[in-house]
Image 1 (tube, one colour):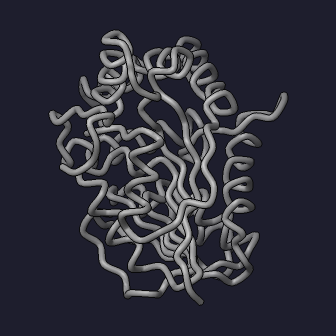
Image 2 (spheres, rainbow, N blue to C red; image 1 turned 30 degrees about the vertical axis):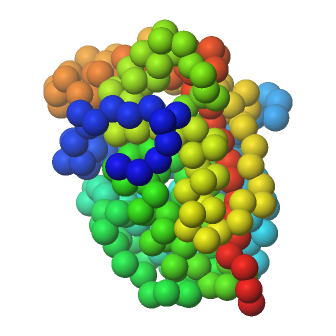
Length: 285
């Protein structure tokens, strides 16, 4: 796979395991965290539900998404961001998820809420899906690229979907700034194993992948301190409830996932991992 030596790799992850994990764990996510499968963004004492919406709002503002824009939400999960973009900005949204369970949940949620225009949800591999060239105002992706196996190839392909003057808005888990100690590398690899990530790129890796795809990075920021409370809350909820016992029913991988909440919090706190936000733009009009 392409990339730089700074990228942390964990090649033992299999794509089928990622799909199965999200098929099974989606109801847990909904009950345990909420309709937005991604991190929350805290500026103060917000509730977890408000913090999740706030992350979407902040990314949409950075991306300067105009009303009625065509948006491809890559890694849409349960459709939280897709529904928000359609309802609040009247975007024409197509969400993509690897999990048929998530696609069904997202489509049902949009229908039950009467969202107009209605987002469309596809069950497809983000690394294989094809969209028409120059067809999107914005490609949007929150915490999906961690699961991709050939990240540089994905960015090259996704860049072709963007109209001249369009944008790619992305949030992602990152490997910490190099050089990392052996302890930090081991902690990040532990997160990759528990969270089913074949690799984690650094901030520099992501900038290079955007630029190699012909896009110009116009915004980049680390939001680690603003999002790490996500895992403090998740740990508290795991310890307070019997969800770990329920997860055992569905297999060891799902218990492994829950047991790695502390690892990702430790990785954030020690600099082994970061949480990054990027906006990259295609030139021309």
